[in-house]
Image (cartoon, rainbow, N blue to C red; front, side):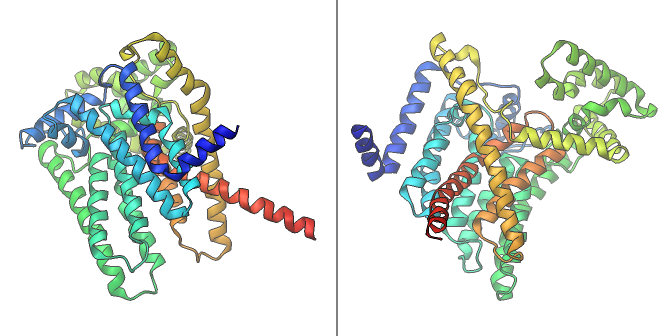
Length: 455
């Protein structure tokens, strides 16, 4: 016991150095037991767009993905090994950002160490770095945004304009990596204006213009390019398919004018219900896509648009069913169904594979669910305090809660399937908020007990 305490004290003398050594060790061990790059159905679209970027021409691009992550692939000349090496370097940078962010907020090395340690030892945090997916880059950009906001006090009107520019650039890249985050700069602007409403107008207007302009340019430019190439002003043509996934459970209520589309969809949904696992159910529209394309003689983008319009009409006609689906998607956001992704066949040895899956399935997924539940509870507590104090305390933690909870609602409104993947970029923020609140309880409870004893 004495040796453990001595080791712990030694680690806390230089916590970041030891966290980086731990992070490096984890990555080396993973490379020893796991072979190569993780490829998933989504990966192909990112690789395809990277080719357009490498050719310095986006003419006739299909509009399937935004260019943030494909730009990273293109910079490596489409070398996926180099891509995952860069992602692992980003992972090590994330360790520094998590620790420094936590230290700036808490002014406590011990708390900062545990926030970082818990985050970086989750297996999915490390295995996503080997995947041709947007998760690692999205987490980095979101975390960097919060680090900039905290480090340079950008929720106040005293922040320097240059750092608002850096923040807006980071937010723009975040949107171009994961379109869902278009809500992030909008929430920042609203929060910033309300918090600093009584300050001089110049101190409010310039930061708002910077954040809105650069983020708006990114959004408008990419959507305009899609309008030119595929005829739709949208971040991605997948949006119609996403809405159809939201209508999967009640697509049989589609009116007779779309009977043929409805019947093909229901045929595939019935097949999946009888022959596939439950996690495939939300993907019904993708199983039905080929038959629907053949039936309608539409291009993929046009079919997505048509299905999106049918789905929106369903939402209007049956709002209670839509709301029910939103609640299902919101609940899934906090779960682990699609959180841990890797290619099983790429393990070099059986024992490490069983060990990795055992650690995740028996231990870590339940720890993650517990942390998410605690985040929701502490968020309710934070919002309740905000209300009871008559909406006066617009602090950093409230902003964090609004951003994370806002993201959970935003994705639930338009996505069904793989919802827990949407939660991943928020992981360090969630862990930070939970751990700091737990440490706060640890200090409050003894004080309350001492007062009771004295009384």
